[in-house]
Length: 209
Image (cartoon, rainbow, N blue to C red):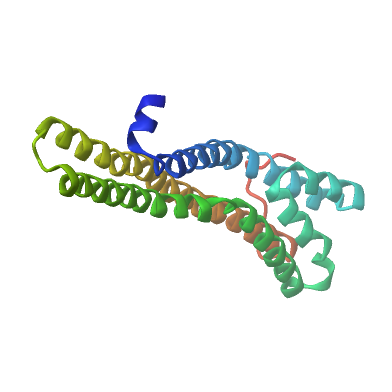
């Protein structure tokens, strides 16, 4: 690996940094964007039970808020439920904006890495080819093997840039899609609770008491 980096020249260093950044973001987002962590399946039944039993006190709402991002959104709405449907919805939207912002954290950086890495690789190749042609002008084309080796080294940075960019692009789109799916889950749960509080919906027969 060290020989490969050295062969590609100094432009391999920023490409290597991009690879480390991309890998760190991918691992962190896989750990953070887990539906079971963001919107646990037992949160909505617990909220329905609290509503039916009239247990929407400060202590229970605080526990709900600390349980998950979905809990944060629902607790915000339930805290303001007494002020009417519209105020409750506005509170939920405000909390959801912050939660979604956290879900999208680092994704713009990952997208930037995906865009920059191949450009760095191309720049490295261009710089390498300039050096090759400068050597040709100075010494001629007598040593074909050395000439081919110089061109091969120049192309290493392009290959390295693409190796970093391709998975970065894939995971950038993958995580954007996951954020969309989680956002829909959060929105559906919030709408369900709003309708439940203001009498437009009844708890499902299978919901836990």
